[in-house]
Amino acid sequence: MFENLTQKLENALSTLKGHGKITEINVAQTLKEVRRTLISADVSYKVAKSFTDKVLKNALGENVLSSIKPGQLLIKIIKDELTELMGGEMKSIDLKGKNSIFLISGLQGSGKTTFSAKLANYIKLKTNKKILLVACDIYRPAAIEQLKVLAKSIDVDVYSEDNSYDPVQISKNAKHFALENNYEYTIIDTAGRLSIDEKMMNEILNIKKIVNPNETLFVVDSMTGQDAVNTAKIFNDVLNFDGIILTKLDGDTRGGAALTIKSIVNKPIKFIGTGEKISGIELFYPNRMAERILGMGDVISLVEKAQAQFDENQARKLSKKIAKNNFDFNDFLDQIKKIKKMGNFKDLISMMPGFSSKVNNLDIDEDPFKKFEVIINSMTKNERSNPKIIDLSRRKRIAKGSGINTDEINQLLKKFEGMGKILKKIQMGGMNNMMNMFKNKFK
Image (cartoon, rainbow, N blue to C red; front, side, top):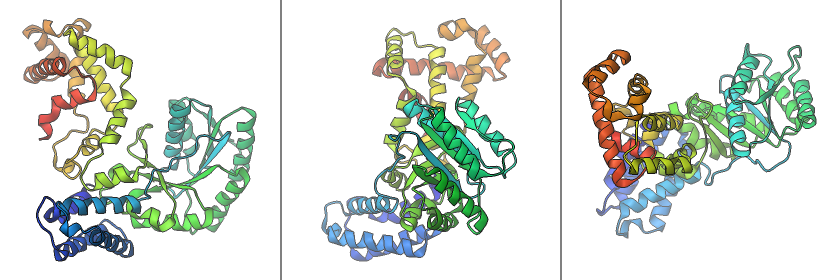
């Protein structure tokens, strides 16, 4: 996420870091380079210039040049301005209302149907209330079936009308159905439409008038850059939506849409899409994103992802097992599964301070634990519970069963033994221990 932008900004700011004296001239030169970097990230010239002008004004106003650590203070000002540019504070959807309706809009191919299901899953995990997904995309082949498949995977109901070709009437009927059947939240997935298609734009405007949603959300593919910003403005002029969803942000290395869309339409980015999994949705925190863009990482989000997967009672039980030297491959496999649920491993590494711009140059497998899982799954129940009994003959059998050579199996057992010793010393469970085990890989 934003690797190219982060690398270029780090290069531009490298002369200002540290404790050395800086001058008004090299600050201006650096900000000129920052402006070029933003423009290359598909930020409009007007926004990029306004941004660097504000940074320069604030830098001179706070006497950066005469401060003890001028470089660090200037970078803080840039971080604060980036945060403000992307919206300032986090703005989520309102889940406190009764019988709430969320209307999902956007261009064709932006990921509305997938997001609708992701949003349903997010709300379900947050509230544990009844949720209804409404299939109003009657134009795209298999769109309704796609929504049904996604809904089934999270155990959420879908309202659809097989023989109806009127999305406005479908949405009206769905609203009545939700009220009669006590659904607390209704999410309406609409067809993708081009902003120049007057008929389709009028259709979604009529849907909005009929259902009177609590919030209208605009879904946009962040990888389309400045086009996404321009499209958002046109849609907002017609729909006056309440919030923006940036999808495919995990694949966006430039970042132009995320940086400028708020300043153009004056509507907050509420969620970002990160990956294909149904859990691949995050609240958008402008300050955290600014830190990631500047290579500072995003430790808070990383910890929150970990907390969502690691149960306190389970951690306590695991701690007791570690204290008694009873940590086994069943525990190890369980920790691996929890880490994988946190999301793309490469993205997790990029959240660690210092890795944001370097993650593309690191030799990181998409699934670094796959080989270990195959090896562990080739063990008997007794071997998983009692790693010490795995002698040479058992290692050969495991190698044959997993298709992985004996040397690699020896390496896993050696790392596992070393991790057990570390865990006993520091009495910690969960993700941090797993990261310890693999830390040499990322140096």
